[in-house]
Image (cartoon, helix red, strand yellow):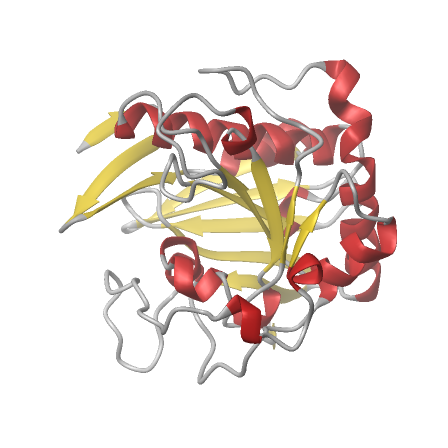
Length: 280
């Protein structure tokens, strides 16, 4: 529908979502950037601060196909976004039954953790928790990004320590330290498993039009991920971002509401199709 630089807003039936190219986040902290176009695919290689090659493969529309880290000459696939099991590449919406939060085996305050009130262990536990119910298969990143019922199978942390002014995605430097508990939880998780993947989700309130809100929320998610990398050295390859506009209001109101202008984070590794070590 709408192309906005590296972002595109797409209408699919009655669903509207935003796609974006995350490669620019890697350029901020990487070196020796090399871009190759092979047929309909673009392969971008960046050397990260630890001297590892990070390779991102996208299709002709900028859609992520694969993200890998090369360790001792071997490819470790962090995200494999290619469909499996005969499913179409554009069939990425997964319909699951509505989750009954009150029936979960964990308390509601441990399923949705409010960062401002939570001790660091609550944040870490939420970021390391398994899915709240058994799922039948692994999923692509696109299926996770665009299927709210699927994402809801993973606990999340609402970063309510940072909210945004109306129409803004700016996070002022005096707020950076408020992300420290989130960064510490992610860092501990990555120390245990260097291939963990965390989804940073941006949201808006219900003011403004849908297209503007999708773009704004996507930029809010990106802003948080950039700070996590620039200020707290969280590897960018372990983060992915997505904006949802006003589709998932925390406070059910059509009025301007600061609590709805927020960012959340959840670990999605258990949902992903995880690759194995591959020969170079």
